[in-house]
Length: 145
Image (cartoon, rainbow, N blue to C red; front, side, top):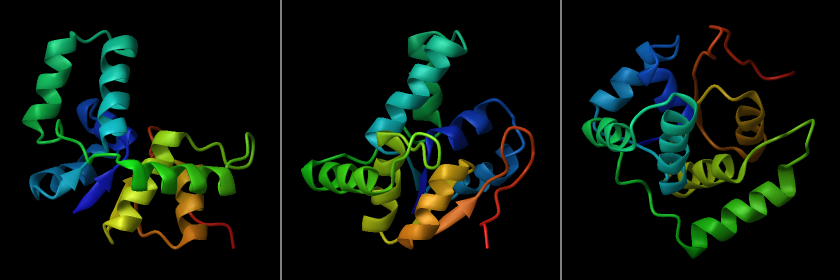
């Protein structure tokens, strides 16, 4: 399984540079979002892209992503602890949804697919495997050495 962050799905749906790398992950049938990631994608599609609510949910269902990874108490606690350890408003501005996705990947012993530099840096620091996707502008994050 590969955990996707919300950006990966949005990039795929918008045919952004990461779409070509997200497609095989989706085609594998082994890609998933957390339940919070599902909410983030739906929020973006409806509120920012102007999609119809039912159509946006149908898009996720057709991609096999509507049933997100459950964020139970254990995952929530781990995500909260991770964010408490790593968050900084300018150096590491990761959302709670980002931390839930990172912890879902860690707990599932799998990779997190994202292009988000602060999230990628957090994962590198925490030893969480990642698949580095290109950003909306086509650039790809590389760790600071």
